[in-house]
Image (cartoon, rainbow, N blue to C red):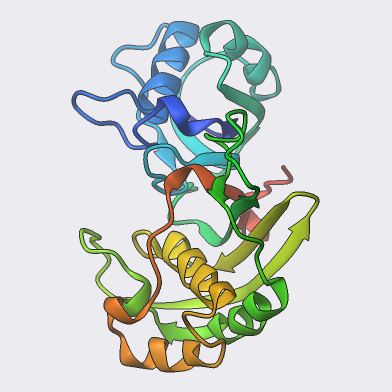
Length: 254
C-alpha cells in the first residue's frame, strides 16, 4: 500500500466543512468520491485531513493523505483528479510520504488568516470571501493586542462550546494584523487551535479596534479564562487555512 499526501485548496462556501457528515456536502466526501472514480477503489478511500474546517471556511493550502494501491504516479494525481473535481476544489500537488505519515497528527504548525473589509455598503462579490464592517479598523490598536496573544497560554476564553479538545492550552507562535489594500487581515499561527479560536480572536481584535476592549486587557482576558470576556465569534466566510507545516522526515516540500 502507498501513502500519498495531497495539497489542495478549496472555496468552502458550498460545503459544510471538511469532515464527512451524514446529510451535508463536505470537502472530504467530495474529494474521496473523486479519488474513488479515478482509482476504481471500493469502498471510497479513507482520507485523513490536517484538521477540521467549519462550514463556509476556505483553505488556501490544505493537506490530506490516504493509503491506496493505485498505479497512478503521485506527480500525475493532481492532473488525473481534475476531471472528477468541482471547480471549487483543486488538488495542486501530491507526494509519496512514509507509511506512518498522518496529515493531522504529523502536523506541527498551522497558520490561519481572517479577512475583514470596511466599506459604506457591502460588496456582493466579497460576501463569501471576507467579513464586512461599515467602520474603518485601527490596525495599530489591533496589533498591540495581537502581540499579547502570542505565547503558550490557556485559551479557554477563546474557545466556543462544542469542541472536543481535552486541553485548552496552545502555543501561538505569531499573531499580527496587516492592512492589505481594502482589506484588513489577521494572521495567526499556532501548534493547534481550539473550536472557533481564530474567529473569536479576530472578533476580540475587532472589539479592540472599536474601543470596546483595551489592547492591554487581552492579558486579563486570557488569564480569566471566561468566554464572555472576549469578543464575538466572527462569521466563517472570512477565515482561510493558509499554511501547514510538517517535520523534515516527511519529505514534504509543497
